[in-house]
Length: 489
Length: 130
Image (cartoon, rainbow over all chains, first blue to last red; front, side, top):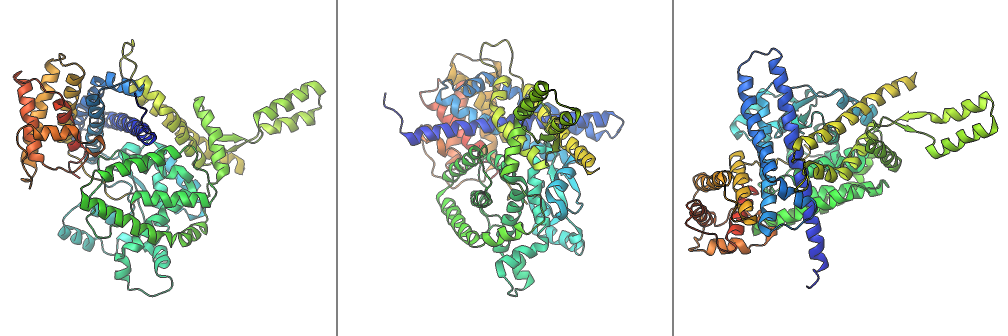
């Protein structure tokens, strides 16, 4: 048999990884939505008599149960895929569609949660934001919302995304005139309430709050030149710079992990959105990702451990572009080139502005710390602190105490090496991502056991893994806050 | 905002396509694996085809007669399955005919036909609502 060309082999490997990520997203979204509904049911049963709530929860729960069953019915196929056992072309192609259908259904149902009473966010989210933004943090509400309006920070964006008619939008704007600039609000998807790994996206949103009325972005685009406010507000170049500014802020405080949640979310979308405007408000994500990677390189922050996700995203994007019809494909390519060229000439100014902010910067040292903490997560331990003295040195010192019959002062001197410093929130979340990216495949294999195994496929198995990871990270963020407080004396 | 508004997907079509894709994959793995669940899932495929015709505005398409639509789908490269709904009406007719024939046990899928039907549903689960 002839060997496959290298590029084909590499594409097949990338495609396998892509479907693996798709599977991970499908199972995760499904179990997280089930958890949200389970909590809602407890809330309703605990005394809220409004009869309309169960009538929303019950059909959603049943429909989600059917999606779990859909995965269970396909478990032999999924198990073979995970173990790289041969599947017919029919099964291989169908599996991709089945996983996409589960994600589509879950994300669709996520919109309906807006009909239920809203939960409050986990308090740790504020600790993370305060920790990252330091002096730049101004208390800002974080609310839970549906996927469509999540990860927005201004009411105008929420309204635009609701896709209401132009007439209604104008009416809203009129009603809210003079009110909307009252402050920022950070919107988080219901699904991500307990998932600190997704919170990195909020740092991008808060980046927008550090560019009020896009004043910073306008200054970068126009310099000191005077431009009419209305023209500047509608200028797509200002909007592109504001997105890159927020991306760089997120990268500055979270490093490479700042990109991961949004890339995974976009990868789980079935197709690319049609470009409706001549100059859309958002630069293509591949352009943004490329610029953030350059920026991190400039800051000398490594991306090891995250490169696979970045590569996977670019592969997925190229695949979706190639599936577009010709005029759309060319339009996208031309737009990407034009936006990329424009932004390239402005990134130095954006980076300088971000560098001047009083943030808690994420550097290579933080990445090294995160790698240390990742090992603790692998041992199922919280990751709230870092030991200043390496354990092998501590062991040597302790041994020397025994051998030398040291006096009390010397004993205390050695024991002081057990001192631990609290980890930063960005280190904790980066450790969480490194741990998850390195472990989710194995957990999926446990969730979908090999054919002939005594155990049956059970998505709750993956749910337990997610819940434990969430718990360890939430507990760590909480502990680190207490630890920092104690150290402050 | 972190990302431009993402495509919205139709839950109803995704539920139906998840079902029919499972049934088609089961039959591709084992043609004798007929059971009540597979039958119901194939019926979901027929429902899908009927609904999609009602849902989409009459497309400006060149109708491809006979078995050509299925043949074209079967040979379409794997990485181009998420393409926009092209020749939807003819593809839909062909796939529905195949499913009805299988349900009536009057038609055994010819080589490549199951793959073609699978590609039809995968293509649409990736593009509806975008």
